[in-house]
Length: 295
Image (cartoon, rainbow, N blue to C red):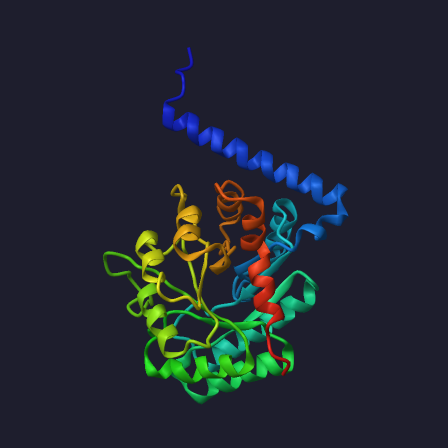
């Protein structure tokens, strides 16, 4: 005789069924109601295409688009990172060429961030200008080669301010050293950077994937110019509701960072009004994109 499920197993199964049911409903709605645009675009502010050293990169990139089709994500804001860091100038330029190819492969579905390693110096600033001015990249992606408060980063921030584009900063706050990430920035450092550059459009990554998310929300409380993306695979309850209460809905950006079901489900299931969810799902990022300066 089959043992009845434990309470934990029952809740896990119920949650999975609810998410899958929601995804199926979304897919059907997208097929039957092309007027979805009336409710606004759904924009994943934090996604990645794949480095071409990965044999399956074409299929993996296509899988991202297909996941968007199934879950109702209209557009992805993507970067490509070097497999090994710190990145060289040659390495990040190659990644950005491939990101541009991705924009062309999936017209209307992909926007590109320019990924650079600020420690390289002038070549990083030149790459940001080239990508944004010549190729229409929508922002800058910074990883963990340097703390965001290191002066070596400031010329890249200043270039992004001049060009009017956002900076997506990889971030996390762990209570122990992260192997391979000795210079990972956290919400406190990003708040400090925002105080130095209040005109910068800073996005702190990983509400749900950067360690202590409650600490991160509180660290950003007095940094009103910093946005927080909701990406990550951590399924804790009330993450989005807490961030919305402390920071305000207009500072939250929907992001998945490849955790598609978690990313969509936490916004869809949040105890927030529909209008607030629409702003998080795409309205806030659409405004950031629209506010870019003409170059």
